Length: 478
Image (cartoon, rainbow, N blue to C red; front, side, top):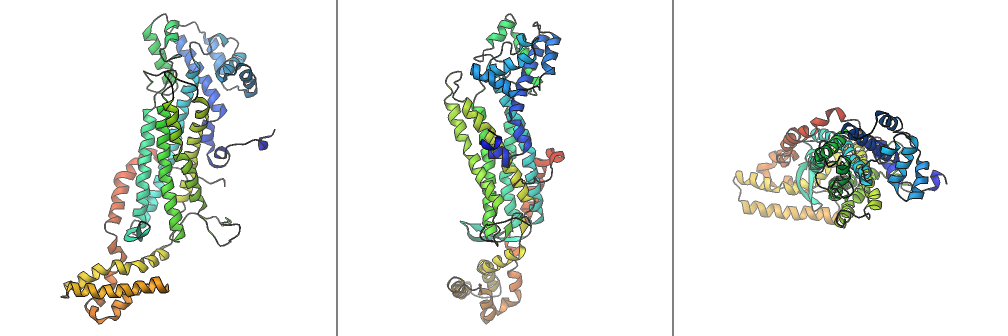
């Protein structure tokens, strides 16, 4: 069968980056197994076991010489993936064959490799998220003062600004960045722990020398880039680690879904629009349409991502005693798909925020349709300051407001409340001040100032560590 005759994950083929796909590829996995075997042999030799430099050099020479078909033949025979690769590596390294995997169990290569994948995956996601935040921050700065109609319950509410709304999205994304950083910092290497986590096999190898066993554990962990290793574990590292990491990724999915949903709603209002290619087709039937397909794709993928932690939680909860094997097939799916999905979401999100289009005139028109009602309190106060009776002013405005609302709701006309007030001599004392009383910028409170403080005090320090990794927005493959 050709590759076109087999199912392949859309995450790897259609959405995720090559870098993230590689981290969860067979080549990365099996060459990491070999790196672990080399690190183990080097540390064991350094601590006095009878392993020669020639054996270690042979392993290093063939570290990247992979023949997955040969390994598959062994796995069909043994029904054991790790032993299949031990034998395949041994065929390539006949001198080192007796010391490959010495004292280790399958989880030495399996679990430690997965922790490396989690670490490297998080290391790839963090700067990608920082780049989204940085780009969206510049958008927020640009539109910090542009008034726009706020919505609560998706009903018109007090004015805010376009930049302030963007900061609502940014606040969630900054939470996610902190969580990604925390999750990566919390990762500890499984190291060399043996079959049930007691290190018994290694204690035997070193004739009961506990210090050498601890030194071996530390040396292998450091060789693989981990400063800390677990002190306590069973045969595996606790599957709560997977649950923790996937929960962080799911939280990112929640933020992305909320933001993309807002963009979709604003696109319907024609106030805000995601990038749209010159030759892009919005609908196969309706040629005029400009569907927010990128934001829809973010929502689609983010929904999948946000549902994955439940799977990891169930897996962690049923690991009997020191471990069971009902986690294995499940985790082959869920860990890779979580990271590839998060990677895809960030790439699409960055592409969106790098090309957001704001339609100022549409925003102003929508404000114009609602602001007269919102401005009535200002008009009442201005009239009172000029000696009018508040209750009388309130009643006159109430009558005009109801009539204007009828014009809008029953006849589909524009809101003419201000025209009615201008035509009513009762309001003559404030006629000259109406433009000032209706200036949208006076209805946005401290939104502009809040944006400035937020960007300076929260966003800039958060993205500063990633300054040299803030690249251009990703081009979408589809």
